[in-house]
Image (cartoon, rainbow, N blue to C red; front, side, top):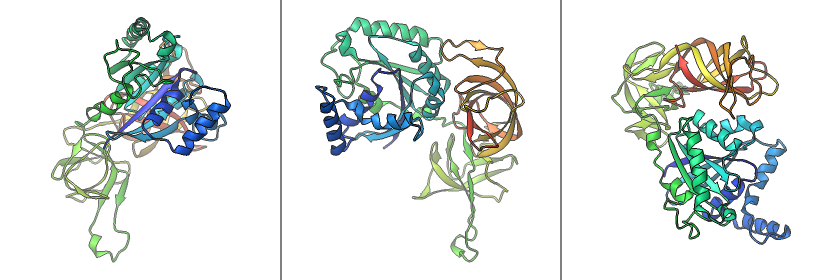
Length: 420
């Protein structure tokens, strides 16, 4: 059974918490005592219905108090698929948190209040999902019950957002009219909207094809750990030498010819090992151990790829960076640590080309620095070569994080757009 990761975003009071509560409730992913507590609190507040948004209120309270991270993850499953929900805050001051939650998502759900239509935050969330190359976008027009399930209102919002999306690089865009409060088109088709011919939200999530979203063409295997026998007298594994890591792209099989970077030496895959035993093939995002036919000096941070399909070996990188530090600014001449796949190096910010306004998409070329939650295009010079692809081609080998050397804290996340 495969896993679909999706992120939810929306303005305050767009019904995001209610939608997540509805999905958890209708998929039987909450315990009886949780439901009883929600029903009791709903009665105490004088509401005539069970307020499902209360299922995530505890998480929201933790975020507001700074107790835990600003992206709350929830898990549920149906007979067809497992799901991981990244509940991201939508306010502009939490841009870094939405970037964190959406960076690994297969799909993003942007909620829109049917009464308010497409607002500034809707545009910002849509832009961020396309910047992060989230392959699928669902625009859930919520609170349709408050506009009398009007088809005309839904079509107005669809047309307005479609016009805006034309400016963005949206791969797959789906519109679904819903009422999270009453469950219309969330799990089952709504009788209140017979004019809507599409599927319910859960049906869309269950049946969305995501296997082809991953790069199965470019073989990329960043080495995370070299496995050697731990005891000198362990004769069964005395000659064992394996290279553990997560496949970042392509398909690997025993017998395949591969190349090691940075040496450029070639060999063949002897075997693919996993905790459950040997495998006939490995593909993203599997974590495996490769054994090679020849002894090559390979260490953490190196890359295994195809001889005729190599990543860029680069020290000069152009990237879009989302700055995540409130105490430090990114400016030219800043010195940072860059972590790309399993390789770590020092980096110098050579130039800040522009700061991007995520609301208007305006490029401010006069900007001299990036502050908390700001996004801009920068040039980096790295002390040792990195093995990279453009982020648009491979999100794993095209993404990186920036670390403050003095505090060891993550201060930025980047998406490579050019390298040499």
